[in-house]
Image (cartoon, rainbow, N blue to C red):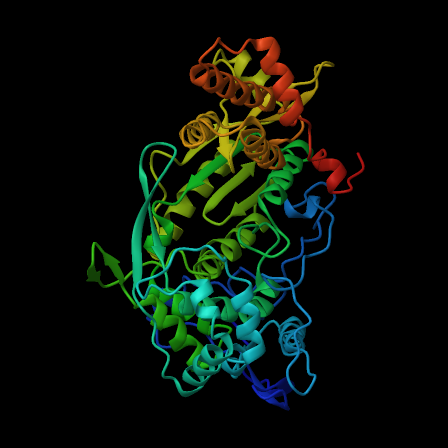
Length: 537
């Protein structure tokens, strides 16, 4: 990896904690593996995702196609990169009328100008009173309290005093991270997901740090990374996958699942990845405090030697940084050497890779398994699979006597190889069956507590549930699943009204009049991906 060691240090203007302009020294990036074994150093890739070369372009906007017929998955989108922080910037002002977001804009511009810079002074942007205040009002009001019992409302009763004290402790290095309270959240498949509940003060500082670090890493992250990024949601990833499968030569899809990803992240490697861009030791030590704070399980403290603090605001960013160096840069270099079309879509730890050739897909699978093993990650042997999927999958499998093409699940949708009325290939996205049933069970359990409430109140409550369901699942070709969900909700309501009635059963004729009065009927909310991405075919 060749870095520009001969480049001299540069200066950029920044805003200190008091709103005054100061010099923020920015030095060129050093080799991230300094002090590592030579064997480990060869595993790393440079900012371009390939061995050798200068620190180059790692910006998050889609790549330009390198050739006539080959284009990357994110290149199909044809849209600009979403810029900004994880939260929208407000117009909060410091006492001397300097905007609190101005300093972060300068950081973003400096990171965009030179992709190899290491930032040496960042902590004063974190403990700025305006930044902390903005982070506080960006937190959830009704979130559960941590081990200290502090809630959003109790902390806000003396907000300015608390922010001044917190800023002073961050400045002096006296801030201490508290352990994370571990709770188990039931999953739709019956299993339980461990979730960490951090203290409100830790959430506040983590959010403030994310607002600053996003200015740097949003420049580095690649276009096929969609999870937990500003301006990018699940439907952005779903639409990119849809367009990639339909417009590129995709015949095979690798559905990769990382076993226990958030709990398997190596702290040692994560710190090395962060130090590649962040040279401010105070910021690195602050992140290490959260990583080593430990967890409380049934009142017993346990050390956290692996993983990130789930439930905190910093965890998604750290997870994206880890996979950016472990997977994103590596797969970009691998795709450039591929013989056929290759598309990549990653949402957090959910990875889908489409290939033109089966042999290339299996070679990628083997190399990815070895790549992950070096950094402490493991592909789930039961959930990771390679399936034949695409416009030619149905006829190829029929010709070989293997039946219909297999399906795969991604972000709540089951993807199916279908056909239009004219016989053309159609990528059908239906609501996952287990998500469908889990939501109905949730509505049923909640309705038991509203059994005897008046019809208007229950109708408004059910209407809000249906609107939320439509807002996510109302994609083209998924109307039958929406209609089925609406029908089941009406059926649950009718059964409840009939069981509480002392006179007679509520007839379906009357029930449909009630449902038409209070419940919205299904409709497609999201446009076709080609229309949203402004593509012309």
